[in-house]
Image (cartoon, rainbow, N blue to C red; front, side, top):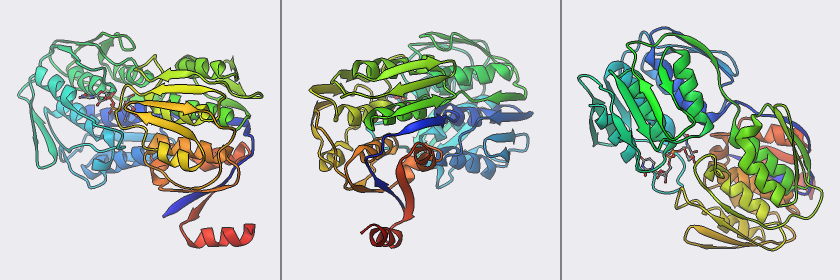
Length: 430
Ligand code: UD1
């Protein structure tokens, strides 16, 4: 089992290149099954979640050919099954996008119920409501979600909660339904827009993605396309906050600055300098951090996927900060680990009350989920002394070459195999 060994204290300085967005890549890969033509996708991040999904797709006869590390060609014309119950697929949340995609194309799909990070109750009632509104039967049994329809017919669907997954899933199925679908109270995240752009490039007719109301006029068939995935807003934000946590100076390259505005605004409130240079954002942190308050919200609000990272930064800011998590109810599990590193944080319900400390101290820490894992790495990078970070497989689900990118910025971080390498490390450093 791999771990990170981190010796904290180095300010991160330099440039980092951001990859394609995991949360756009997953539905886009799944949507590739919606045509018999060949689809070519670029800027696919080489992370565990995308690879698990591609393996599961290959498992049902879809030809998935990696052209290079970030480009893939997919052809689903020889699909031999619409049942996906691969053991790995249940570990990733995005497995549910295969339901919307296959239901749209084949009018039937059976997929293992999705897993993903344990950050709270992750209901799928809005996905189901959407599929049923389009005329599908949906049954949950034996750990599977089974859907089928004689025909899918467009409908007017109001989402009771703003859900990225449900918005995308209904958009997938509705693209090949008969007639017009309207999704109200739709999610507006950049990856929702990216999936709509991808489907439109295949011949779909989707308007309004990026607003509250998405209008989809179903088409009879989708065709092949050549598409590049949007840059990852959360990976970019994580490196921006790494600069803040380590009092560094980082140019985050290949980003869409508009997608990062909520993060930039909060960094400026804490006293960092943030400047935009075309498709790059530079974060410089040269003075003491100031406290601020944050509430996570659907886009364009502050992303829940950046909540642990900003909490780590605010843990080092002067004064008392309050972070309110309004999307997932179980997203402060990492705080106990942070307290073991010297943070002064109390969690009451969905609120963290943070009294800033002057420094964290290195410790053995265990990663509870993907984004919290990245956040704990930032804490370890800023800390005095050494940290051993366990369960880094969670981080590898969503960050490509996280340790390498951090090392290129001057971080002292390396991957070791549990126990043996750590003993060697101790010998070398004692
Ligand atoms: C996606 C992202 C995740 C991100 C989240 C919010 C992927 C693979 N994951 O997750 O990284 O944190 O968006 O930006 O893209 N809900 C319901 N019923 C539903 C669906 C959702 O009640 O049918 C609730 C959820 O419990 C949660 C909220 O809606 O409280 C938002 O969830 P949603 O936007 O659907 O998140 P995911 O798509 O699971």
